[in-house]
Length: 247
Image (cartoon, rainbow, N blue to C red; front, side, top):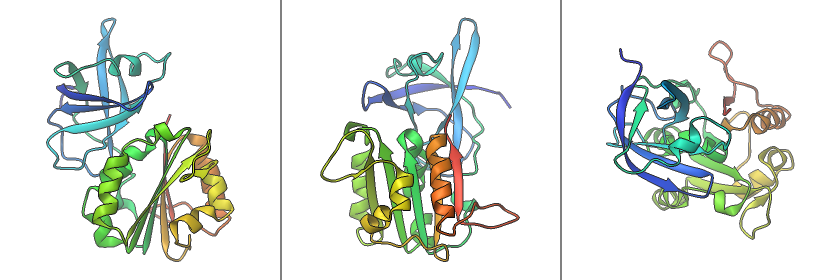
C-alpha cells in the first residue's frame, strides 16, 4: 500500500488566525468515527506529515480536518495557507482507538475536549451509534476564548436533533462570558460545576468519559475523575475513562 495518496483541497475554513479546518477530497480506507490519519506536504524535497483527527463521519464524501497553527512548525503554517484546488498528501490508512468500539457498556457518555481535540467527538456525534447505545451524551469543549469555540453550528444541529438526550457545555479559561463555565475542565469536574451545568451526575456506575486534548487537561481531568471513583479503561481491565493526548 502506498504511504501517501494525493488529495485535493475542497475548502479551507478559518475559525481564527490560528484555528483552521481543511475539507479534502481523497479516497482513503474505511475509518471509524474518532480515528485520525496524516496530512502531508513536500517541503524542501521531503514529505513532512503529521496526524490529524477526522472531523467528518464515515461515509461522508469529503474528509474534514481541524487543526491549530504552530507558528514555528514546519507543516501547519503551510496547511493553513492552502486553498481550494491545492494538492495535499493524505495517508490512506486511518488509525486510533478513541472510538466507540473500544468503549464498554455504559448509560451516559461524556466527551471532554480542549481546542482541536473536539474533532474526533464531532465525528462520533454525527453517527447513529452514540444515540443507540447511551441514554445521555454530554459534550464539553474548553477553549481559551469564546471566539475559539468552533463548530457551534454543527453542535447546534445535534442539540436540535436530540434536545432531551444531548448537553453541550462550553468552558472558557481566559475571558468571562455569561454562558460558559470559567476556568479549566479538571476544576469543573472537581468542584461539581460540570455536573450541575449538564444536569447529570458523573457516576462511575453509569458513565464512560472520553478525553481528548492537551496533555495537561488529560492528566488533570483523569486525576479529578479518579477522585470520583472512575479509572482508566483497558481491554484487560475495563474502566470508565478513555484518553487521546494531542501533541
